[in-house]
Amino acid sequence: MSSTWFLFVVIAVVVLVALLVTGLLVARKRRISLDAQREVEEKPKGGSYAASGGIALAPGGEAPEHPVEDRPETDGQPAVGDDAAVPRDSAQRTVRDVKLPEEPAPTPVVEEIEPATGRMERLRGRLSKSRSVFGSSLLGLLGAGDLDEDSWQDVEDTLLMADLGAATTNQIVERLRDELSRRAIRSSAEAREVLHEVLTAQLSTDSERAVRALPHIVDGKKQPAVVLVAGVNGTGKTTTTGKLARVLVAQEKTVVLGAADTFRAAAADQLQTWAERVGAEVVRGKEGADPAAVAFDAVKRGVDTGVDAVLVDTAGRLHTKTGLMDELGKVKRVVEKQAKVDEVLLVLDATTGQNGLMQARVFAEVIDVTGIVLTKLDGTAKGGIVFQVQRELGVPVKLVGLGEGPDDLAPFEPGAFVDALLG
Ligand SMILES: Nc1nc2c(ncn2[C@@H]2O[C@H](COP(=O)(O)OP(=O)(O)OP(=O)(O)O)[C@@H](O)[C@H]2O)c(=O)[nH]1
Image 1 (cartoon, rainbow, N blue to C red):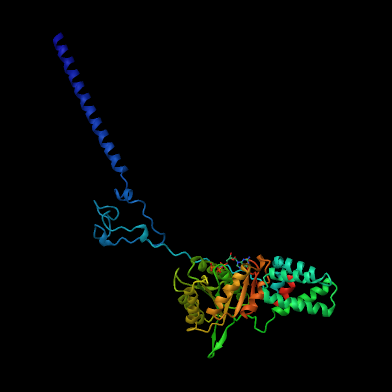
Image 2 (cartoon, protein in one colour; image 1 turned 90 degrees about the vertical axis):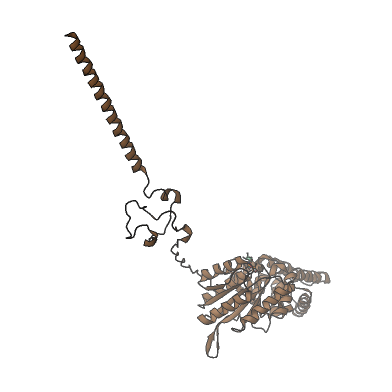
């Protein structure tokens, strides 16, 4: 009986152990299959393409083209086993291939321009440095009554220091002596009047001071005025071209600006900025392009579009380099195949004194200068250079630069100028 009972217990234990082992095996199998599924789910869509190819950028709007022939299936639809995207080994678009939509050019904000009339009066304060020489020193000497030889020597020295030059100084001193003794001048107010008269007469010329920048009719057709702006680097050519454009635009004239200063890339950018501020068009070439070609294109553009004036900012090369000066002559010759050059403005920096005068002589040999623009008169006590330049070149000063502001360009009027000098 007891052995039967023992056998029953052993069989029961064996059955239990067998069930336990089977249950464990089944549970383990299930767990493995769950893990494998998770692995599949975590794989990124598109296989390794997205991960290793980086983030492909494309502009909004147009979808990138994936031609059917580039794809492994034939009906354009992905099939089982296909990559979700174009396989890595087929031609891929790179960022550089993607054309971005062009940004619309910003609408230029056309500025308010100060009227050109009365500018000399408005800017007279800018001549304060020169005024201290003419107004204070000279008037002080002349208003003191009878002048002895030493006093006249002082007058002469003062004029020389103000850069009037020896010849002009002698003429002025002579006339002053005559007038003062003839009129028996006693007060400083009377002395001022005489000085004003003598200096104004010295600056007066029969030449026309108007800048020829208005259109004219040729063979019954409107032809723009062509103005070349020349001068040595840094004298203020580009600035003057821009200021002059403003004067014209303020008078409702249309302007094309030619950036023929291809020597310095920034000069064309500078001119472009001036143009944008007044809503004018700029014709420019590549850096180092032939200035004559750019000038030609600018004038052609002006003729074709029927504008009122074409202002050409030329390369500001050193006058000592003969070849480069010849280039300026070439600019003029080439432009004249298209239209007559109406005005050649020579820009001189008043602060350079005698040096400016030497430049002027060389320029005048190369090109027919028709007018002088004397810039930076606001920064010098040597406003007397105006007298000398005009006398030396026999060309009238037409405009004066009296500051860096966009409207700090004034027409040159001898009476108003002398008035500002005397204070
Ligand atoms: N104070 C003062 N500065 C001026 C005047 N005219 C021009 N300038 C300044 O002079 C500097 C040179 O002027 P630009 O117009 O660049 O001279 P540029 O002759 O075209 O020079 P390049 O392009 O190098 O040949 C600039 O800083 C101008 O602002 C003026 O009348 N008064």
